[in-house]
Image (cartoon, rainbow, N blue to C red):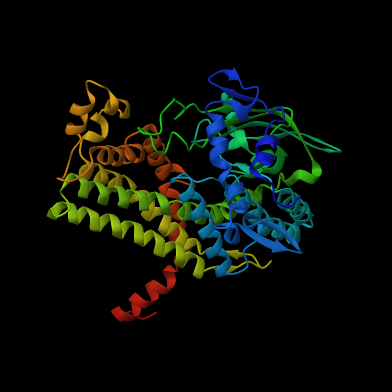
Length: 482
């Protein structure tokens, strides 16, 4: 197998995995009313490979076989740009919601490929052989992947090994036994996106470790249906909704889970880090170097949608010529286009790892991510200001056709002379779904916390910038003798 059909992807999820939703065990995730919506959304990745309009971007050829481009290790700035375009296109087809069943997993594979080679060179280990074999397995089977990186952490002021003293040793995933045939792990990961509807989950360390944390310095990959793995799915955004009132979230969903590892066995060929605590931090950082590039790529359709909905509602409300509205629209355009330029720059300024993998420029990536995150709520506020309070007070779509209310509602929803009341309500519903629904709230929280906090981006920017050169230039200008 090299490329799977959407039906084959869905069928692969009927494997006895242990998933709970609102306290109830889910017998079949593919038929669940909420998780099923997420599965249909995730199928976009497989549909693109079959669609002649997108297959040239979604599929590459290797050794005479066709594979998903996601699994192709980038070797140049052009490769990174094509990967970014694929992520952006898939997210655009997902109506601003990233698909993420291959994007995040291959980010982890690339990071593991880079770091495992460095570990082997320094320590004499053989992790890179395991990583390459697992990468090939995923690519040849066209698998869907999740990444479990963020531990639940417990008391954030304490390190992983210090949590046990508080009675919470499972706050970080750790090795509890080493056997001749593999390791046994226990603990919890949170914010695990798409886990309910992927085939494999890759576990990475979440932070730098001290020597006392050696058992927590662990990385591995296992099928989601492995005994001892339990997924507790978040119910956020899981309520029923219709297409008219919720044009995005009625059709598109991403599941998030608390992922529990209850004495899970992992065979040695799936273990990529086994107590090498000095390498936990570098692996965590190597992953975010790729994953933040994925993030800024999939944010592009979202910011475009904010610009478009604001421009459309300004027109339908009859305020497109007002000075303050034009000011807000020009700011929104600048916000979106600056992000797009930074995405392209981060690919073109790539650095080449020793193994030939092209890594997006971390400085530019983090500047782009911080630009998006620190301005996102401002962008939302400007869309809401242009749209008006009707975002949260408008009648439902069902009221339009009511025999008694329909005429009143249509007249109430009329805006600029000559506009269609139904069109205005649809535009308001789009802006509402983007900015004031639970889907909008989900996007606002993601802007702050997903792919690392704003503070993490600031630290990376300070670490990556060549401050010595800047200070040297300032000394020269000031005439200070070195």
